[in-house]
Image (cartoon, rainbow, N blue to C red):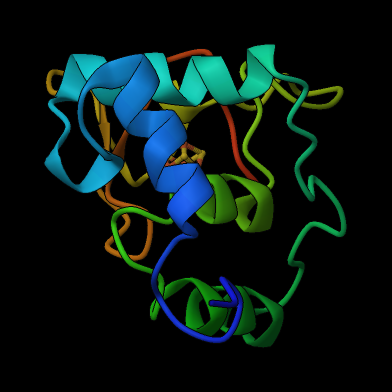
Length: 128
Ligand code: SF4
């Protein structure tokens, strides 16, 4: 089954999550999701950090692509959002200052992402 054509994940990816964490992202708690995200990057995940969406139209296009993704499509969300585990650019942009970041919950409240995030992380949907 193709991962890009629908909102499911492959059997192999599902099994990999089960083997490592005992559940898939859709069932995972905040702390386990953080571990899953860090594990993807420890495995060498490269994300689409650029181009940064300069216009509302470009921003909206990314949201349109993210919206159909299921909670289990964690890896795909990280790739498309350009997620990284460090501040970005000259201005050292990071989740902590993003309008979507819930500081006390340590959570990205952008509905199309809806994932836990550490304050020093960043993605290209960053907004103030
Ligand atoms: S939109 Fe991106 S930068 Fe903003 S809180 Fe969410 S993950 Fe962090």
